[in-house]
Amino acid sequence: MPLPTQSSTQHDNHPLLRRPAQVPITPGGAATPKAPLSLPGATANLPPTHNALICVALPGLAISTEHGQLTGQGLEGFYRAGRRMLSRCRLRVAGREPLAIQARMIAADQARFVATLSLSADGGPDPDVIVERTRYADGTEWITLRSAAHRHLRLPVEVSLGTDLAELGAVASGRAGPDLPASVHDSGMRWSCATGHSVVTANPPPSDALASAGLLRWEFELPPGDIRSVELRVRPTGAGPIRAVARAATSPLAQARAVSDDPRVEALLRTSIEDLQALLLRDPVHPSDNHLAAGAPWRCGMAPAEALAAARMTLPLGTRLAAGTLRTLARTQLVGAGPRSGLLPGPRRHAGTHLPPSCTGEEATLLFPVVLAEARRWGLPEQETEELLPVAERCLQWLRTAVGDGTYLSDPHPGGPWRCETQAHAHRAALLGADLLDAYGRGGGPELRGWARGMRAAFQEDFWIEDRGGGRPAAARLPDGRIVPHLGAAGVHLLDTGLLGAGAQAQGLLDKVQTEQLARLFGGPAMDSGWGLRSLGAKEASYNPFGHRSGAVRVQVEFHVLAAGRAAEAHLHPLAEQGPAQREEVRLPLAHRQRGQRLAAGSGACGAVQQQGASGRGLGKPGLPGGE
Image (cartoon, rainbow, N blue to C red; front, side, top):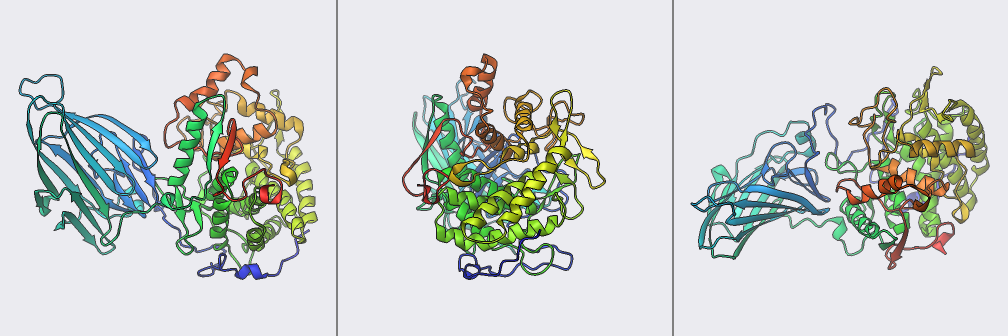
């Protein structure tokens, strides 16, 4: 039975939810919102980044290779708001490039490079000069020269600079173009084009500047053991230094510390929160609303489904980020007549070789009422919840309209396959949405629960594949009735049932025996690599350990959902009950964690997370409004 259409309330016109311009629905049903940053369609040959050091403090970004020199190749450079402000920054000391010996990240927004230089005539093994470069995402770089020689040194130092002022999407697709001509400006260089300007200033000022080569020169006298430094600053013309959202006076994430018998957990939590803060962005129309960016370094912009999923993970650290993300996306919701009314627009997502791309807009639409309901359980104030409630109602109305008299939700809709994770999202949205509607005296809750109950009974028959190993869920059912039987990471969403009243877990699509079997499958060697969850099981015919959706470990939402889901279902056994090999498997990911593998602290974290201070607002136990 379709839900009754809810009329607009006073909260639809609340200033925090008012749209700068209504997002239209085109005759073909497609939304036309402006994306923060988009890549061109042909991106098959993206530059490699597996060895890149990526410093992030949005809207600032600095991408470097292991040698520390910025050569203008690939994605290298300083970026601001999606534009490359500096692509080339090559250092020469005494006429030669220093020998790179170390490169490492020291924070989410900082990288340090160490190199050496031998100048002695006798050619001994010991270097005479140690060169250290510290690069920041905000467009700052410090170059420090330290003498290790036993004699006085006179060092000519040159820095060669250049830029194309290209957008990140053009750089990624190989359409950046040549370097622009430079002009001497103040104590550095300046570049201009029709779409932007960039300035590099140096402190101390160079003794010489050559615009035709983009070259800055210094002459340093360096006694034994002495140090000389140069500071370079990159910025648009007339702009001050980048003020990252993470550097704001108040953070949407509360201070927290982890308590665990493993001392590495606290450092992991601290680093993870720092990484999250580096990815914070402001809504340009409503700067008080923050959300997390996705796709670093390729996109660094809003991705609705990923932003909502990440905000949901951070609810133990307060509700401000979730509220800002919900308000930002509420302003993009499609309104008016038509089957897509109520949908949150989102791009298509590659789904591997077995299935066509999925619609992240559908996922975001199903996540919206879930995040709102759970944020209320974690302490989101009633007034803010009520302001967002009409948007959640329209999301739920879209769900029932899309399903119609059927049982399952296709993705993409209409005509797409019935994916198991989409059914999990829809089932969770129905149960938590019904709970939310009931709490505010809105109609539609019983109808949603009734549909979810019928879907649950049908799913256990239609999607469960019996085999000698105990069975497993199908990845999807195609419109012609065929089953897609492979086991992949997307199935973990069947374990993520969501929070209802008093913090209780909502009922899942699988029964108890099926849930236990699925947890065993994800904990087995075919899916659990020891470093994370494989996107496709190792026993599948098309398994590819380097395939983006066909086997590679993606330390993102699926891994967190698995940890949280298994903990909630009591399938995550204590380490004391595991053998030495299993215990080591738990330890290794912590010991060898690399930056770039972002882990959001949430209900699946090992040990306890304790919040400090009141900046998170409403911190407390989930389940009761206000967190009490």
